[in-house]
Length: 335
Image 1 (cartoon, rainbow, N blue to C red):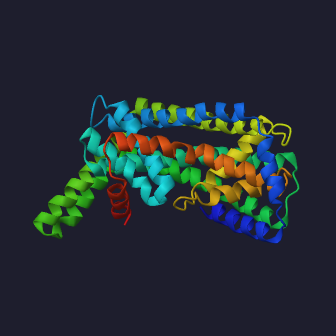
Image 2: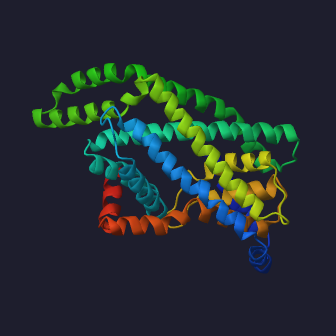
Image 3: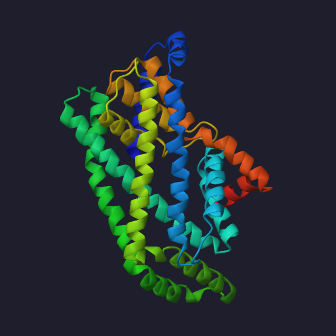
């Protein structure tokens, strides 16, 4: 998040200091190969199905045969909520899955934590690859961006190790921690203690999938497939701009690595730092003109975030869900 925030700050400074030719930006849209852009939607939609399959693995300790259809619909609605509401929308998906699959809500918050950990781990690995390729290529970057890259290189290894330790702690220490917390909270009034005890028990149940070697391997496999699909989508986007930009597969992976951190910062209805980070990477690392980089960044955001919104709205309408209530649920659970 620190790296993303630094890049957002740098991008804002760059955009403020340069002139912007709106005609050139609009003209780039007329030269896009729309067949590649549409083709890129196939792997992007595939990521939602992959996420549903991975979440089903998290659910199995609680429910032997979870419904992929229920998880998929909750996933589509949940990502629509993130785009519309920002980070409070993150909590809509675990809430809906818990309701649909009739399992404790707290257990699905635990599954959400596990998903975030694996996604962050994959993003760090891709980011580490991006950093290594930038340094190996000898690309000349400005002084301001250079310190961001240097700082990012130092924290990636630390964060990866921290995430691995966290996964292992869930695997081996969840039940001992549960017992100690339960014992330590005995001073609470009986009705409060009973409620907290249920929450702790449900959370531990939610991370039970980490105790199985087969489940962990399957989660890691689904995570790899998900990021391969994301890279495929970005590759199609790059091909849509062929003739205006020349990207190799390695260039696409570098772009994915940096932009994945921009998506950490979300603003309701806008997206957040993702677009700014994309512009910074394109202009500073690849020498793309600001106007062209801006149009590419906006299409990246639309293809990876906004495109799911109409489908999510239709699915929610079909299921009779009230978006006002979902927003309230997301805000209450995030506080």
